[in-house]
Figure 1 (cartoon, rainbow, N blue to C red):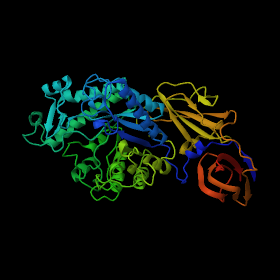
Figure 2: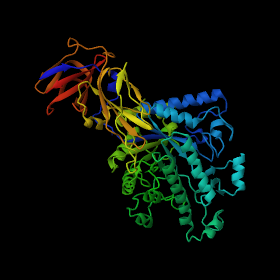
Figure 3: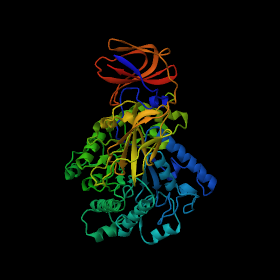
Figure 4: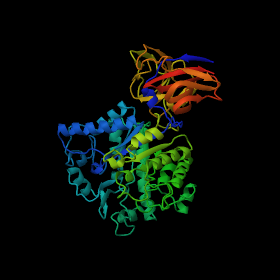
Length: 586
């Protein structure tokens, strides 16, 4: 047995590796609902001046930094909450949540800013749109609002006013709004939430859309309303395929559907095993229709309840939704509620109450995914932003906990594999210059960067391990972190659909830097049979095979048992405040 010293790696590498021995998946959507309505998550202040704009930008960059550092790869940014806009809209007024006054222009374009900042961090930006909601009581009165009233576009029940989905001109307005965003912003997707008709709007002559229902000749009021919604969903999906087919279109409906046998049988799926469907006959939407008709790319059911909750058991709903989505060839990215962590005393008792419980829900998403496309979306950011201290558990915030236990490594977003995408090749002219990887830019693609210890084989199997994925980029350069001055690097094109193509490899042979070498006089390894014995206590030891796959991880130890391990292994060791790698040939 021969012990060879390799280049020392940095503490940065160690911090990105799981200490529990369980690796996170290489593909998984990890997103956060960023609510702007009533300024729930962002911004904290409203105004039209430059100073307010700068403060809003700073808040957003801090938010995105936190998500990126915690290995999230997407945000769902609310840009239209009540027929208003967080962007330069052709059709609707600026949001009062942004400027303080509906229709007043800000000093910058938030959506443009958020898209650019997301892409700087390798994160997708999905524009979150409320398709029909106009007001929950406020009498909006901009010229655009007045025109909508005069044209008869609005219907009201109790305190909720929505655009009337029965009207062709309303349906076209929703399509036009989405088209405007797609054509003018480099977004990665569009997502609707769970607001459609006003809750419990009557199905009789007292309803404001009753005459339209009668004129339609339809037999059932509820079926007619659901079909109005379905028509809008299909029209938006068709428009997306025309303008930017790689942009994902999804909807986040309520978390329980098809509890009626007749509805489930209609689509050939098992009846939902828990709870009561409150959306089919209350807000008149039918999520299974969108899945079965292929008019969405993903469903994000709001399964906001805890495991074991009798009226909506997460452990029953999660696999049911996954099965339904897979049956129709679409993805399921579950939405989770973080409300309890904001204020447990006022949060519904049905919510998950511990970080460990939320981690268990994420693991269930992974275990129940039938198409290797798990996903989780958390509602919402302000519930776990660390203010106040009560949002922490044992002094640890939600993001730190999840990174340590579930999001240990970066992940690519799942691939929309059912769409035909232009073929891509390898990156060209890959080079390492002064600690920076660079390559020639390709048009409208992204890149995945993988780094492995010096001497690792250039084997495509290594790209299947999340531990080796170090970056997902929208730009054609990557600064090597300290400790990677000598390493094996691979860069692969990832198109906007999510397809990853063959990588280009390079052996980086720069000057050694970063952490100082640790000589054998300070820390040495001796073999006793199949056990590596250390000269002093190692704070952490992580063992990899030659393909870069983690074999085991230990902490606070003076030896590691390598029984059953054959061939070349790499020991990444942290000891005495230094981090380094040793190669063993067994």
